[in-house]
Length: 235
Image 1: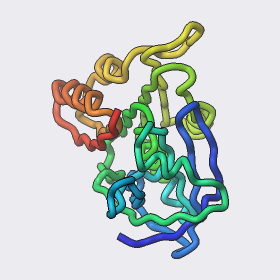
Image 2: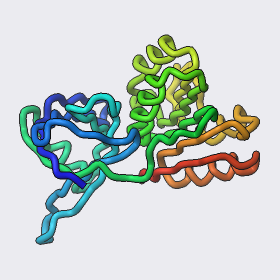
Image 3: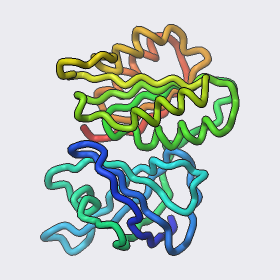
Protein backbone atom coordinates (compact mmCIF):
# COMPACT_ATOMS: atom_id res chain seq x y z
CA UNK A 1 0.00 0.00 0.00
CA UNK A 2 1.10 3.53 -0.74
CA UNK A 3 1.29 6.31 1.85
CA UNK A 4 -0.58 9.55 1.14
CA UNK A 5 -0.64 13.00 2.66
CA UNK A 6 -3.84 14.98 2.19
CA UNK A 7 -5.56 18.19 3.25
CA UNK A 8 -9.11 18.27 4.58
CA UNK A 9 -10.78 20.30 1.84
CA UNK A 10 -14.42 20.01 2.89
CA UNK A 11 -16.47 18.75 5.82
CA UNK A 12 -20.22 18.24 5.57
CA UNK A 13 -22.50 16.95 8.30
CA UNK A 14 -25.01 14.79 6.46
CA UNK A 15 -27.09 13.80 9.50
CA UNK A 16 -26.91 14.03 13.28
CA UNK A 17 -24.12 11.43 13.36
CA UNK A 18 -22.90 10.97 9.76
CA UNK A 19 -20.18 13.17 8.29
CA UNK A 20 -18.66 13.44 4.83
CA UNK A 21 -14.97 14.35 4.76
CA UNK A 22 -13.28 15.27 1.49
CA UNK A 23 -9.50 14.88 1.38
CA UNK A 24 -7.48 16.65 -1.31
CA UNK A 25 -4.30 14.74 -2.08
CA UNK A 26 -0.99 16.52 -1.63
CA UNK A 27 1.72 13.86 -1.82
CA UNK A 28 1.34 12.03 -4.08
CA UNK A 29 -1.15 14.28 -5.84
CA UNK A 30 -3.41 11.53 -7.20
CA UNK A 31 -4.68 8.07 -6.33
CA UNK A 32 -5.79 5.12 -8.41
CA UNK A 33 -8.27 2.71 -6.83
CA UNK A 34 -11.00 0.26 -7.69
CA UNK A 35 -14.55 1.32 -6.85
CA UNK A 36 -15.34 -0.18 -3.44
CA UNK A 37 -11.82 -0.21 -1.98
CA UNK A 38 -10.75 1.48 1.26
CA UNK A 39 -7.90 3.48 2.78
CA UNK A 40 -6.51 3.05 6.29
CA UNK A 41 -5.63 5.55 9.01
CA UNK A 42 -3.30 5.01 11.93
CA UNK A 43 -4.92 6.56 14.99
CA UNK A 44 -3.59 6.83 18.54
CA UNK A 45 -5.24 5.06 21.44
CA UNK A 46 -4.71 6.00 25.07
CA UNK A 47 -2.57 3.54 26.95
CA UNK A 48 -1.08 1.95 23.86
CA UNK A 49 2.30 2.72 22.38
CA UNK A 50 1.33 1.55 18.91
CA UNK A 51 -1.41 3.27 16.93
CA UNK A 52 -4.49 1.41 15.78
CA UNK A 53 -5.27 0.94 12.09
CA UNK A 54 -8.79 1.75 10.97
CA UNK A 55 -10.11 1.27 7.39
CA UNK A 56 -12.64 3.56 5.71
CA UNK A 57 -14.23 2.96 2.33
CA UNK A 58 -13.83 5.52 -0.42
CA UNK A 59 -17.25 6.90 -1.36
CA UNK A 60 -16.14 8.95 -4.36
CA UNK A 61 -15.76 7.88 -7.96
CA UNK A 62 -12.46 6.37 -9.13
CA UNK A 63 -12.56 8.92 -11.92
CA UNK A 64 -11.86 11.69 -9.39
CA UNK A 65 -8.21 11.01 -8.69
CA UNK A 66 -7.07 14.21 -6.96
CA UNK A 67 -9.28 13.75 -3.90
CA UNK A 68 -11.32 11.15 -2.06
CA UNK A 69 -14.55 11.29 -0.09
CA UNK A 70 -15.09 9.42 3.17
CA UNK A 71 -18.50 8.96 4.80
CA UNK A 72 -18.65 7.70 8.36
CA UNK A 73 -20.76 7.78 11.48
CA UNK A 74 -19.50 8.85 14.87
CA UNK A 75 -19.04 5.87 17.17
CA UNK A 76 -18.90 6.92 20.80
CA UNK A 77 -15.47 5.96 22.10
CA UNK A 78 -14.39 4.70 18.69
CA UNK A 79 -10.77 5.76 18.09
CA UNK A 80 -11.10 5.88 14.31
CA UNK A 81 -14.24 7.97 14.01
CA UNK A 82 -13.18 10.16 16.95
CA UNK A 83 -9.95 10.99 15.14
CA UNK A 84 -11.63 11.72 11.80
CA UNK A 85 -14.45 13.72 13.39
CA UNK A 86 -11.76 15.77 15.13
CA UNK A 87 -10.26 16.92 11.83
CA UNK A 88 -10.93 20.46 10.64
CA UNK A 89 -10.90 21.99 7.18
CA UNK A 90 -7.37 22.95 6.17
CA UNK A 91 -5.69 20.40 8.43
CA UNK A 92 -3.45 17.68 7.05
CA UNK A 93 -3.74 13.97 7.60
CA UNK A 94 -2.13 10.84 6.23
CA UNK A 95 -3.40 7.43 5.21
CA UNK A 96 -2.37 4.28 3.38
CA UNK A 97 -4.04 2.43 0.54
CA UNK A 98 -5.91 1.63 -1.49
CA UNK A 99 -6.72 -1.90 -0.39
CA UNK A 100 -9.56 -4.39 -0.15
CA UNK A 101 -11.07 -7.22 -2.17
CA UNK A 102 -14.57 -5.69 -2.18
CA UNK A 103 -14.68 -3.84 -5.48
CA UNK A 104 -16.74 -3.58 -8.65
CA UNK A 105 -16.18 -6.56 -10.93
CA UNK A 106 -16.91 -7.05 -14.57
CA UNK A 107 -19.65 -9.66 -14.52
CA UNK A 108 -20.46 -9.51 -18.19
CA UNK A 109 -24.10 -8.91 -18.96
CA UNK A 110 -25.42 -9.45 -15.42
CA UNK A 111 -27.69 -6.82 -13.92
CA UNK A 112 -26.37 -5.28 -10.72
CA UNK A 113 -28.07 -5.23 -7.31
CA UNK A 114 -26.53 -3.13 -4.52
CA UNK A 115 -27.87 -3.52 -0.99
CA UNK A 116 -26.67 -1.32 1.89
CA UNK A 117 -27.57 -0.47 5.45
CA UNK A 118 -26.36 2.69 7.14
CA UNK A 119 -22.96 4.00 6.07
CA UNK A 120 -22.46 0.78 4.14
CA UNK A 121 -23.63 2.99 1.28
CA UNK A 122 -20.11 4.48 1.03
CA UNK A 123 -18.35 1.87 -1.16
CA UNK A 124 -21.57 1.17 -3.07
CA UNK A 125 -21.85 4.85 -4.05
CA UNK A 126 -18.37 4.61 -5.56
CA UNK A 127 -19.33 1.45 -7.43
CA UNK A 128 -22.59 2.91 -8.74
CA UNK A 129 -20.90 6.07 -9.99
CA UNK A 130 -18.22 3.99 -11.69
CA UNK A 131 -20.79 1.68 -13.29
CA UNK A 132 -23.05 4.44 -14.59
CA UNK A 133 -20.23 6.21 -16.45
CA UNK A 134 -19.57 2.98 -18.36
CA UNK A 135 -22.72 3.71 -20.29
CA UNK A 136 -23.95 0.14 -20.81
CA UNK A 137 -27.62 -0.77 -20.56
CA UNK A 138 -27.52 -3.20 -17.63
CA UNK A 139 -29.95 -2.34 -14.88
CA UNK A 140 -28.44 -0.99 -11.67
CA UNK A 141 -30.59 -1.22 -8.53
CA UNK A 142 -29.78 0.20 -5.09
CA UNK A 143 -31.71 -0.83 -1.98
CA UNK A 144 -30.60 1.20 1.04
CA UNK A 145 -31.90 0.88 4.57
CA UNK A 146 -31.66 3.39 7.42
CA UNK A 147 -33.66 3.79 10.61
CA UNK A 148 -35.73 7.00 10.39
CA UNK A 149 -36.10 10.32 8.61
CA UNK A 150 -33.25 11.93 10.53
CA UNK A 151 -30.88 9.33 9.08
CA UNK A 152 -31.61 10.23 5.45
CA UNK A 153 -29.01 11.79 3.15
CA UNK A 154 -28.03 11.79 -0.54
CA UNK A 155 -31.67 11.47 -1.56
CA UNK A 156 -31.50 14.35 -4.04
CA UNK A 157 -28.36 12.88 -5.59
CA UNK A 158 -30.00 9.49 -6.06
CA UNK A 159 -33.05 11.12 -7.64
CA UNK A 160 -30.79 13.04 -10.04
CA UNK A 161 -28.86 9.90 -10.97
CA UNK A 162 -32.10 8.09 -11.75
CA UNK A 163 -33.21 11.02 -13.93
CA UNK A 164 -29.93 10.98 -15.86
CA UNK A 165 -29.69 7.19 -16.15
CA UNK A 166 -32.92 5.35 -17.03
CA UNK A 167 -31.28 2.01 -16.14
CA UNK A 168 -30.70 3.12 -12.52
CA UNK A 169 -33.31 2.64 -9.80
CA UNK A 170 -32.95 3.25 -6.08
CA UNK A 171 -35.17 2.79 -3.06
CA UNK A 172 -34.41 4.01 0.45
CA UNK A 173 -36.23 2.15 3.21
CA UNK A 174 -36.83 3.17 6.81
CA UNK A 175 -36.99 0.43 9.41
CA UNK A 176 -38.38 2.73 12.13
CA UNK A 177 -40.08 5.61 10.33
CA UNK A 178 -41.62 8.50 12.20
CA UNK A 179 -45.13 9.68 11.29
CA UNK A 180 -45.41 11.26 7.87
CA UNK A 181 -43.05 8.99 5.95
CA UNK A 182 -44.56 8.24 2.53
CA UNK A 183 -41.81 5.98 1.20
CA UNK A 184 -40.90 2.33 1.64
CA UNK A 185 -40.72 0.99 5.17
CA UNK A 186 -39.31 -2.17 6.67
CA UNK A 187 -36.01 -3.93 6.16
CA UNK A 188 -34.04 -4.29 2.97
CA UNK A 189 -34.18 -8.07 3.36
CA UNK A 190 -37.95 -8.06 2.91
CA UNK A 191 -37.70 -5.87 -0.21
CA UNK A 192 -35.15 -8.17 -1.83
CA UNK A 193 -37.16 -11.27 -0.94
CA UNK A 194 -40.34 -9.81 -2.42
CA UNK A 195 -38.98 -8.03 -5.51
CA UNK A 196 -36.14 -10.24 -6.76
CA UNK A 197 -37.72 -13.26 -8.42
CA UNK A 198 -34.72 -14.59 -10.34
CA UNK A 199 -30.96 -14.34 -9.77
CA UNK A 200 -29.86 -16.06 -12.98
CA UNK A 201 -28.74 -12.77 -14.58
CA UNK A 202 -27.76 -10.93 -11.40
CA UNK A 203 -24.57 -9.88 -9.60
CA UNK A 204 -25.01 -8.64 -6.04
CA UNK A 205 -23.00 -6.36 -3.75
CA UNK A 206 -23.87 -6.22 -0.05
CA UNK A 207 -22.47 -3.79 2.52
CA UNK A 208 -23.75 -3.27 6.04
CA UNK A 209 -24.38 -5.15 9.25
CA UNK A 210 -23.66 -8.86 9.51
CA UNK A 211 -27.34 -9.70 10.07
CA UNK A 212 -28.42 -8.06 6.84
CA UNK A 213 -25.64 -9.69 4.87
CA UNK A 214 -26.50 -13.13 6.24
CA UNK A 215 -30.25 -12.78 5.63
CA UNK A 216 -30.02 -11.30 2.13
CA UNK A 217 -27.45 -13.90 1.11
CA UNK A 218 -29.67 -16.72 2.36
CA UNK A 219 -32.71 -15.32 0.58
CA UNK A 220 -30.88 -14.97 -2.72
CA UNK A 221 -29.26 -18.41 -2.46
CA UNK A 222 -32.71 -19.92 -2.04
CA UNK A 223 -33.56 -18.61 -5.52
CA UNK A 224 -30.44 -19.90 -7.24
CA UNK A 225 -26.77 -19.16 -7.67
CA UNK A 226 -25.26 -15.80 -8.61
CA UNK A 227 -22.13 -13.83 -7.71
CA UNK A 228 -22.53 -12.20 -4.28
CA UNK A 229 -19.82 -9.87 -2.98
CA UNK A 230 -19.90 -8.78 0.66
CA UNK A 231 -18.35 -6.18 2.94
CA UNK A 232 -19.27 -6.26 6.60
CA UNK A 233 -19.85 -2.97 8.42
CA UNK A 234 -20.44 -3.11 12.13
CA UNK A 235 -23.89 -2.08 13.30
